[in-house]
Image (cartoon, rainbow, N blue to C red):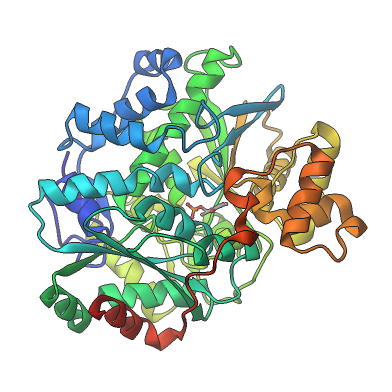
Length: 497
Ligand SMILES: *Cc1c(COP(=O)(O)O)cnc(C)c1O
């Protein structure tokens, strides 16, 4: 399998090269050149496999310059004891046609671990395969969960440095503490005075700054990205859609070939794009339901075909979805637009220069055939956390609650009672402030983040995850704060020292 850029500048790129580069040098994203398809037999055979075996099979279609033993090694290191569930991604049945795919049993308690526990192992092998002599500098902007997951994955990985920028005040206190207490001699964490989009634009600017890139190259470094624009992050996410389907077959909830829905709480469009690739490969999917918070740019896009970022940015209770530029959408548009790089360059230019673009009728039609979009306000999200706890004793985090609320809206709109999987992206403890307040109101008064964790655990009987329990006793190791326009200098300083 070879990869090409959505902007047309590169083709014939191996998966190791694509993973090492992260973003294509023409500003585009790498996509597979050929389609991968599987038959029903392949899916039925997954039923008796464990998660690691399922992962190995699916990764092998896309990462063809990694041999089977290498993939096995990566998978083994990534999905082992570091996950608190032996099933890795357990599927919990909420009621007869609704199921929760829990993607948060990894070390940082959010679904980003699914990709970022394995990406560093791909990266180390990709560096070797491509004969790379420079050290790789992973540069990442985070709205909260990516940063910690990337730090945890790359800490003390040979031949790599990791620099994470997060919006100052734009992440939860637990997320902040998870990052600023990160150990590892190759780790750096910096707060930026700005919101997530400012932070992400700042990182993109550094990648495209020839002056900075030349300077670091002289010192023996080159940049790569651990954001979900890296194909090496996207491909491990395809696995759990197949895995969920296999588990529904295993539990005799669906018949082989029966179509199901997935509801995905969406920000950068990475997770739901992986679902789309799974569907394109032949996974029987009825609808992909794209759930947003009040930053509902994708809801509008799916309805109108116009992606318009000229709108107010909202800070919500689901901060990992507070995003106005969903980078991975570019891959979907490329795939649905007949792989026409010129078309994509036009849209992305429009987005840059005018602040919006409108897709053609063909693309809009295809999107509406597959996707349904909806959004949830903060109050609706909190009400959903309360009602699901009351009805099922199940505790949702704020992001997963957005998905659940949008699913309810979808059912009211469509009457569709197809078997549905809600993609559950974070442990409720990671957002314990909002969740505890939603469930236990007045009793939360005067409690700090850690008091809230304990209250939530005592009241619900759910155990506090290992990674969050002792955060208040860890030393703060990263204290740098910078302005938006200083991010490049900060990077140069780190690599000069
Ligand atoms: C990152 C994240 C999302 C959004 O996923 P995308 O791939 O960016 O669409 C949703 N929920 C949580 C908890 C996250 O960390």
